Length: 220
Length: 269
Image (cartoon, rainbow over all chains, first blue to last red; front, side):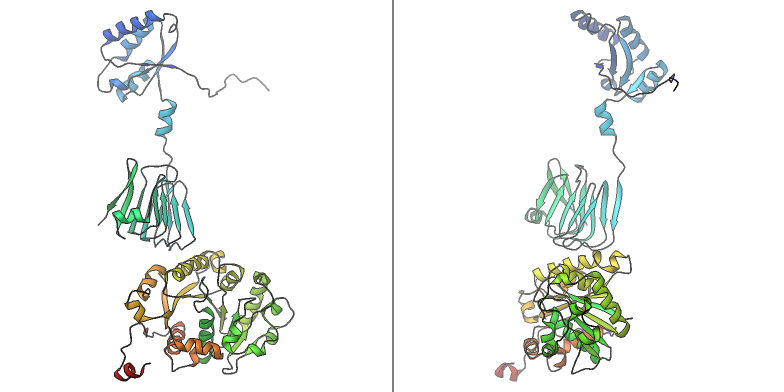
């Protein structure tokens, strides 16, 4: 087979990130000279990413910033965590706008579906809504379990166990027409019936996480 | 085509066999050709309640295994010629009931009868599952107390997931609540759950309320279905239940405390 002239492969590299925390280029230049003087060879020709998160609302000319760095033998490959005007400038200058691995992971929230169950959930039955919210048109009996990676809505009495945010989503909530549950849990934080009863007696309400602990909000 | 009714509960001792006998007899007295089958293999009771224990020759398991035919095994009731009993085997266990075997017997019976009443054993094992699998109508027998209600809820879950109608995505089994051993005076004092409480938890239609009655034990011990005793409130309540099952609109009786008359207070009831 003939050798391909082009190949596209994904590879990860570790790059140094230079945080620009001041909009005044003279100050930046002075500080940079001081840093380079400490270890002149360390930064020589090193590829750098500029983190511009501190410059959100201060306009800085990216081109002059770049030439300032090039003069000092630094290679700028791109910028990260920058506001939109910077991204536009970077595009004109042929610089990449990159997202760190951490940023990319948090930004990517998988789309969540909805599972609807149009019947009473009886004792011994278990319903799991994977990567979805769960909506029950009916009651959840004692001894029944409803689990969802998202939120749980019960249009009836919730008497069994309800576990929302099973995948760790702390924004999930449990809403029921009558909260009489044996157990409610949001992202692993749970209350047994007696904890729940201290806050709510078979009323319509919403259980959610506030910081590290659960809270009930009564609904009209 | 016959309607298959399962009388079930999950919990034992709530009155499944008493109710099966009474409802089957009631249907037959109304002119419907009815057979009542005892699914409690190994703990045969229905024949005693029906008063035909001395006439058992062949049983349900014999028919399933092809050792006898239906006409040999079915016992014709002495009081009502529209009523037949298919007794359970006392010497076998529940594993003798197979889906194919039970299905075949019910299919054969369906050609001949208007109603097939299946008296389920307690529990949620093989026997109970076979009794409810082919059902069109379920009568969930419940006592007004929390453990019975919980077990009934479990059985309702089974009816919705493990029955033939559920597996084949047909119209679901029609579920009815039969509340037995109801005592209005104890409901009033808060010792017992009320009809409304049970209805709210189970969320199914109420078919009947049978009051706690001395007549039930007396009837069982003498082998006469309590519905025959039309002097007793339990017998009357079962008659109402059968009427409702046949689509009549009958008000529910015996759910409020009876005011004792002057003479009754002196002489007792």
